[in-house]
Length: 219
Picture 1 (tube, rainbow, N blue to C red):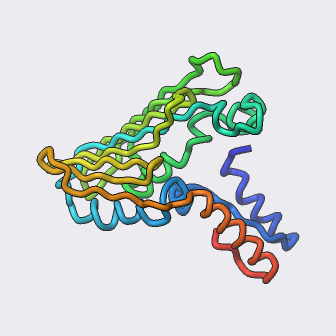
Picture 2: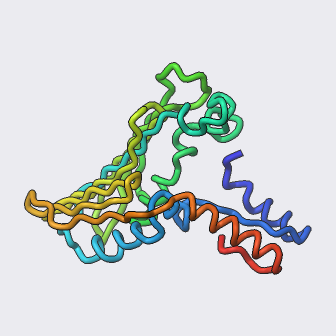
């Protein structure tokens, strides 16, 4: 099940029986796997930290993807995302967004969420959710809105950041980022040639090598 409360017991069991284990959460590295290896770090370190768009006023993110298109090789009704007993639902299945938002802007001080099952999808979990959060960024309250669903056949994965002097449009799907100031596009970045799947292959390769050489895996 998708439940972090079981991790201490898993760690204890793996340690006791000397089993090599790797626990992959979200942006501690997981959010990284949504786009390029460095672009979220670059956004935080080079753009937001330097007040490129002034003082931040709001953040709006969304992740929309049609569940039956997740894995063409399986019936969506049998997937873990479709089943409550397996930790499914859009909030846990698409948790990377929550993770990178907290990694960049900090853990929320306030949170309000609404979600339910409104579609004809044959699942017993929520297929949409709207999350409202308030974080503290540079000692100021920062409102963050996140919309998530399993319904859109035109998938979207984006994060827009608004400031007193402009705004940023980041597409995690296309690995691109645009900066606007005074209504004018001033900077346009694209991580061409990025192969998202290669990062999963690298992680598996690292785990196998660590296991064969009795070393700690990277995660």
